Length: 225
Image (cartoon, rainbow, N blue to C red; front, top):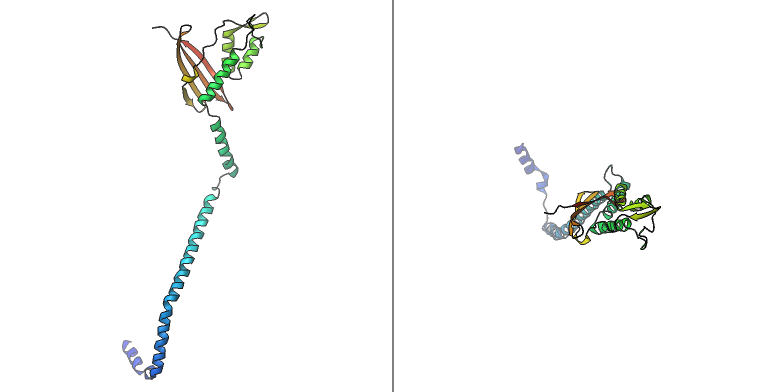
């Protein structure tokens, strides 16, 4: 096969064509012109290729960003909107020291209503049941009943304190909350005075629905060493 190709090249009529010197110079000049144009065309091609590559990359980035903004498959858009609102409300309703002070202060105010200075009867309530209902706004019914029965008696159709000594109270500046779970906190405080001796006040405050109430208020008297 190789020998046949060599014979063809030698005997081909193309080898018999004679080119004039002028034709040769003209052909060389065109080749030089093409060589001079080549870098320019190559530069334009490179710029075009770079712009096309950038455009494709930009389209890919936009597509990825669009997909990331779409709701996940199976996700409920309404629930996604409602969840942050629920979390925000839950955080706003978390128990803080300031809220505990407010709850306790309201309890103390309700369990010790104003008395008539002369008769020492309760002004605004005539029965235990009325006072229990009022105190229950800040406590459980059990706590309200316990303390109203311990502090008051009904006499001549009126309500009168058994003793003028008030209920032992927390010192707010020394309050320390112990979190039992998301819906329950416990507070204990040791106190000592000449009137009461050494006592421990213990209370539980629990979340009931959308509010916090006192579910335990206990006084323990400590034996003197």
